[in-house]
Image (cartoon, rainbow, N blue to C red; front, side):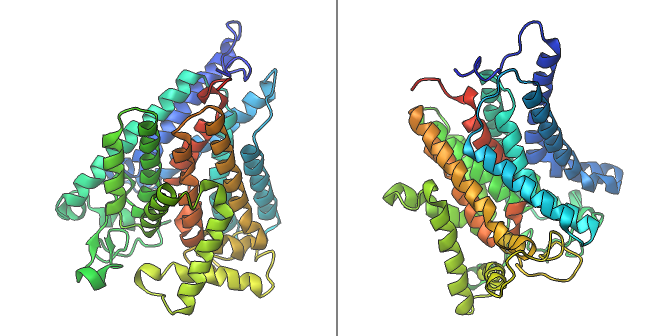
Length: 434
């Protein structure tokens, strides 16, 4: 393994460095648990105490990401022998610095700027930190095992709560009170039965009624779908290597379907096409984003603006904004659906939101994903790992959701996928020779 070369084991005479390594592992494990179960913990804490501070439990997740970034910086500064960073890391750091500079130049509301800057930079910074931290091979294996096991638990919880009576959420957990107490929740005024978070009306034409959506411990269907997509491809990768992962594949696959997330359903179709025809491929991220945007434009021109097609308008408005000559956007925090200016250009599209704030620079994350996919596939080929291409497919999930959903910019759910990609690319994951 590339352990010694990357400085992954502290020398016996360096107890401080060993303590840093143990702390980094503890923080990474805590982050995985916070991503998977943090919202449910906040709900239970609020239900037991009535304290609205429990609705801000997501701050613990962000704090864990910040701690990993700081620990990675310390590890790099103290490393005796620094290894060259793969292109994916350089891209992640490059776009983070770019957006940070744009944020400093923004003249808008400070809170809106900070909130949107967090959405633009937290995932790439998490990816870079996990990849450059000095893990041992055992630590990487344990983190992968933790992702797999918690994904299975989350999926089973999702299926169980979906099948349970609505009274589980309305009476026992009192979800409406919890949402109303969260001042940062834009949908806090909507009741359980009125909220698209818990019921989907996209298939009303076929079913005649709204469908209950699985939310599991995430208490939100779209972020849960992102987490289930990560668990699904991890299970498929383990199966490709000859390990037993049937329960993980079946549970995450079913729970993902029960979210009725359009991004998740599109991803399943993409996976099937990839396995049957080899297209689209993770190498073709640029072509995939072009196809997603073309579909959005065509759908909007055909007047498909309701139900399952509501997300198309956001991407189209972002593109129209560019065509109108706004090449550098309005500034971070000054536009999009997470601002206080009233300019909602981009609608519910991550790319559209980013275009409204940063113009053409909003495509930088797509180039980063392309670098990630290429690095993962190259590493899989070099180590002759049949599971690597499955890991790489998660980049296709994020690409599609970035084009059509603002939830792609959050670290919740998506953080699990980026953590999986970073750990896979880590030198400790692969042998030095094929």
